[in-house]
Amino acid sequence: MIAHPVSTAKTYIFVWLSLLGLLLLTLGSAFLSLGAFNAVINVGVAFAKAILVMIFFMHLRSGHYILRIVAIAGFFWLAILIGLTFTDFATR
Amino acid sequence: MSDSAAVLIARQYDDAQQQRSAADLGIWVFLATEVLFFGVLFAVYTMTRFNHPEAFASASRLTNITLGSINTAVLLTSSLTMALGVRAAKLGLSRPLVGWLCTTIALGIVFLAIKATEYYLDYGEHLVPGLNFAYAGADRHAVELFFYLYFLTTGLHSLHMVIGIGVVATIAAMASRGAYSPAYFTPVEVSGLYWHLVDIVWIFVYPLLYLVSRS
Image (tube, rainbow over all chains, first blue to last red):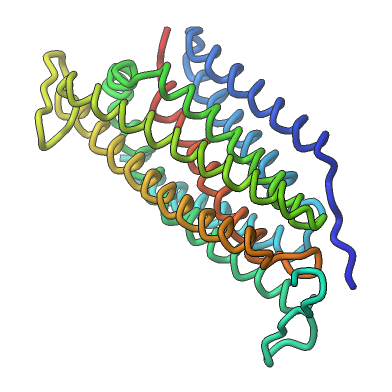
């Protein structure tokens, strides 16, 4: 039988605490007036949280590499979708 | 039953490992399409906010940041309980598996209840476009656009939550009948991946709708 790598419950709880910490960070930053950096922090923290969930809860760390390629492809096409649309609005 | 049952292998697969890898790849491809499905809404959001930055800041201040933040914590916690459920399935701990899945369902229902409360409060504040929208300040139309996006995005997300709760409830019922074992737990894992993706969607929805500007 193939061995399935199993993370410890401790790892999951640590990831969860990190996610809650990042939530407090992004929430707190919204109350500071930082100009464009408010959006940068919000989106940056969102990506950090999403990556934590994908690596640990969704097992991208231990999964087959092709799963990581598929995950990256999803976000890559999203970047094309938003990026190319933006070339229109940003240059009018 | 669960310890003695051999894994059923469909005829197109060589072995259990290949069958499991195919399921993993299948759900990840589906999740990538979900990223693009919600991505369209994020693209519309980005362009509209780019064109009306001030209106989006004012509109965002009208959302309920307390309930929105609590809901984010609830959903992040439900991802933890789901991950612990999949872990229990891998280790063949059937009672904890059912327990974690039921906790996940309960947290999902709490999320939806808080969301419904929020919608009710939004209605009371005349924030529902097409129903009772009223806004006295400047940029009325851009603020209304924000709330169209707010209800469309959170509504579609809630629909995914309802589907997720149904899926996890089905898996929990199967698990309580001993359908899974360390040799076969693919349905638990695949449902978990779907649940986590719905969580990830909210991870992006939350700052974009609730945290544009609070200072």
